[in-house]
Amino acid sequence: MTILSILDLVRINEGSDARTALDNARTLAAQAEGWGYRRIWFAEHHNMAGIASAATSIVIAHVAAGSTTIRVGAGGIMLPNHSPYVIAEQFGTLARLYPGRIDLGLGRAPGTDQLTLRALRRAPESAERFPYDVMELQSYFAPATPETQVQAVPAAGAEVPLWILGSSTYGAMLAAELGLPYAFASHFAPDLLIPALQTYRSRFKPSAQLDRPHAMVGVNVIAAATDAEARRLATTQQMSFTGIFRGARGLGQPPIDDIDTYWTPREKAQVQAMLARSIIGSPATVASGLAALVSETGADELMVVSDVYDFDARLKSFEIIAGAV
Image (cartoon, one colour):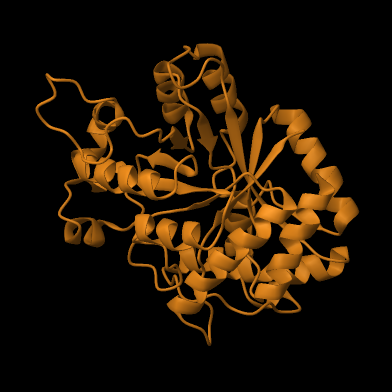
C-alpha cells in the first residue's frame, strides 16, 4: 500500500492569527496519526503573511510535542539560507527530544524573494554550493571520532534521515548520486514530474541510509462529501495561487461559489498549470485519482497538501483521503 503523508502549509487565514495556525497544525498531526499518515512536514517560507512556518525547526518541536507516533519534519529547510552546522545542531536537538520521529528534507531554492534573501544575509550564489552543503550536513550527523575537531552537539550519531526535495531533474540527480530519498514538488510544479522520477530511479546509487530508490510525490487533494463541495473548497487554494501572479501573497480566504468571477482568463491558465495534478472531489473521485497517480508514477509515498479554509472541513478532507487509500 502506498504511504500517505502530509505537507502542512500552516496557513494563516483571514480573521485568524499565527497562533491558531500553529495549534491547528499540532491538532492535525495528532488526528493524522489515527488515520494512518506516516509523516507531517512543514516548509520554510519567508516574508509571506499567510504562512506561519518560517521558523521551521520550532514549528516541528511544537507539533512533535503534541503527537506520539507520526514522523515530523521539514519539507523542507532551504539549505542555502543557512549554515549546515546550525541546521545540524537544530535537527540533532529535535532528534534527541523526539527519537525516531524527525525527518530533514532539504531544498535548494530560497523560499522567498530577493529582498528577503538579503535580509537573511545569504548571497544568491549560495545555492551553487547546495550539493557540498548537503554532504557537510551529513558529516555532522555521523558518529564523532577522536579525530573530529568540529562537532555539532548533539547531532553526532543522531539518526535524522535526509531527503532531497526538488521540482526539476537537478534534485533528482543529486538524490540519486547521494543515495537519498527524493520528494518531487508536483503540488505546484508538475511539469517535470515523470522525467525527474525516471532520472532518480535510473541513476540511484545505494547508500548507508537507503539501499533502493524511494520516491515521494507531492499532490494537492481536496476531498468532501460531493464533487461540487470539494470544488468549492478548492477555490481557497486557487485564490492563493492567483495571488502569486498578482504579487499579493496574503492571508487564506474563505471559498467562493464562482472562481471565474475572481481571476482573469490569463490568471486561470497560469494557476491551472501549476495545479494541474490536483485531485478534487468526493471519496470515489479522490480514490480513483490517487490510484491513477500511483499507477502512473510508481510513487512509494504521496505527500498530500489539502489547503482548505475551514479547519474542520480540512480535517474531514484528510480523513476522507486516508480512507480512499
